[in-house]
Amino acid sequence: MLARVQRGLEQLYRVDTGVAIDDFLIDAAARDQLSPQRRPREQLLAVEDDGEMALAVYIDPGALANLARHDPADRLGAHNLGDFLLAIEGTSHFIYAICCARAERPVTQLELELQAEIDKYVTCLLVGEPAPASSAALRHRLFADPSYEPDLDADERARYRAANDNAQRYTAWLEAAYVVPGRIPEMLGELRRFYRRGLAAKLADIARAA
Image 1 (tube, rainbow, N blue to C red):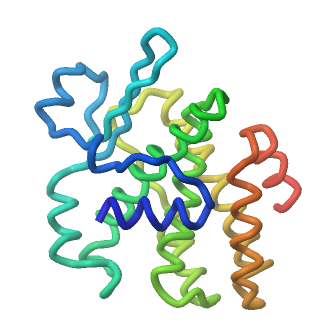
Image 2 (tube, rainbow, N blue to C red; image 1 turned 135 degrees about the vertical axis):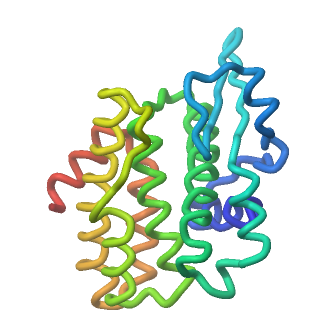
C-alpha cells in the first residue's frame, strides 16, 4: 500500500526520490530505541549527522493491515478512510522531506503538515470520481471539524491548526477553480507548481486565492 501511495504522489508531482518508503519503515520497538518525545500512529523521524540526514517512518501496523484487507482502490469508506489518510500523511512527509533535502532547502514542520493535508485531499479525490459533490464531502470530512491528539503542546496544536486552516482554504479554491468546471488536468498542473514553492510563497498564494 505505501509503495502504491508513494508511486502515485511521485507521479503526480513529477518527482523521483529513488528510494522506497518500505525500506525506511520501522516497528514500534525500533522507534522506541530512538526515544521520540511523542509516539503517534504516524511519524517521520529524522536525524542529521555530519550533514547527512537519516530518515525512518513509523505507521501503525494495524492501519496497514486494515488497508491490506480493505483496499481503498476497491472502495473508500468509513472502514478504511482513516487508515488511508494515515498512510498518505506518512508517505507525503517522507517524499517531501527527501525532495527538500536534495534541493538543500530547509523545511519546517508546518510546511510538511500543510503539504500532507493537501495530499490527503488530492489522493482521496483522485481515487474516486473527482466530482464537485465528492470534493465538497471530502473537504468537510478532512477539514471541517479537526480533532487533535491530547498530548500536543500549544505550539504543536497551533501548527496543526494552521496547516488545517490553510489546506481548507486552498482546497476550496481548487474545488471552485478546477473541480467544479471539470478542469482536472489543469488542477494537476497547479498542484505541481504549488508543490515546488516555499512555505512563505505557498501561504501568500493561499491568501490571494481565498
